[in-house]
Length: 392
Image 1: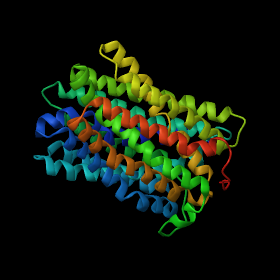
Image 2: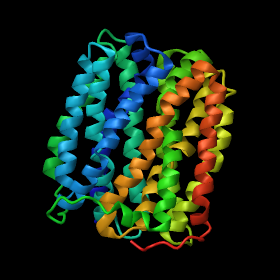
Image 3: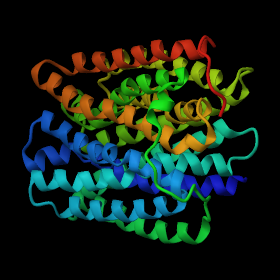
Image 4: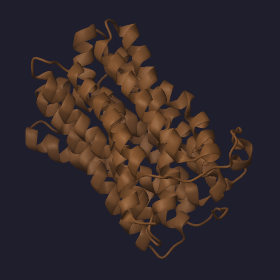
């Protein structure tokens, strides 16, 4: 158990997220290149999330059966293949197929990295280590925003960002294979005991909350670039920077949230839940705040703060989730929690785009704020210690 191990796992997570989240930075360019509506822009997010969701339980079962290392290595190879497909897609339908492959590759991420973090986290720093790893998600997303929007302004165009990210996935995979040994599994591939997990009251609560957390997070990241260009009226390059600032804020929120949770005088479950509820309550106010931005400075500050609270939850969420289930079920439990998040992510982006197409961005953002409020209400019983949970 060491911070070096945490660093290796976090580096893998950053690279995988650099690939997966590139599509969120490319929304404005996809709309222009393929001449599609805002609703169909949302469908691109649904496509990548569908591929992700479809293989989550298989990935979780593979992690529990064979250990995280082979799953992590194969995931990067599939991600690289999907990124190449996006870069050369000649039409919108082909683009959607390539995005399904990208999502399928990313399905390996949460079950494998969560198990890896439980193995390498220093004693007494489980929350912090989980959130350091989760910073790889926001850091990778932020870098993808800068990479895609920067290359879009060159003669190589936005597709070059996908080529670069895919090549990095292969290089990091080779380095990870040499530096990380991993843990073994049960030796067999068996379907997860989902019904048994859902018998745990704390797990049911977190799965239900995950749907609204996913809707909130992916509607936000999916439409920052379009909102800043179309409603605020700023250039696409600055819109990419705004998305990067959302991710920087999210990275900071994860570290701060994890450190606070580790220091609260409660159980792991209750401490994590207290921080989550606080994040969601403030997030509601931040969604209202972004409706008033007009200048570059106000946009940068508002979206950075929005990211701090809206994207600060995943590490806390997974620490809480893994604390309410037995250690031998971490892979399957993570897959279930991530599936719940992905259900929200499948529905919310195209629904948000439809609301904007038929009404306004204001109505869309207020709907996302409502998702944050519902998540806070669902998690509140855990924060108050009113739900009996099973120790990990």
